[in-house]
Length: 87
Image (spheres, rainbow, N blue to C red):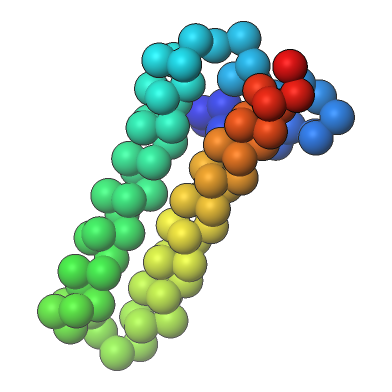
């Protein structure tokens, strides 16, 4: 599990606080890659119809899960930016 995916209460320092900007960027790229790759595959399946009709709900749930993963990365980046601005 990456640092973004780990729950960090807002009263604790952001896990990226002590990282260099390059290390933060590495974390963000790492955390974005997997959900974007999975989302691309799921959208391809959806657009080509490469799924059984009764799998549509599962496929849409998987897409929602990947969107949630991406949202967590955005929240982590926004929190990191906010904490850096307070220094």
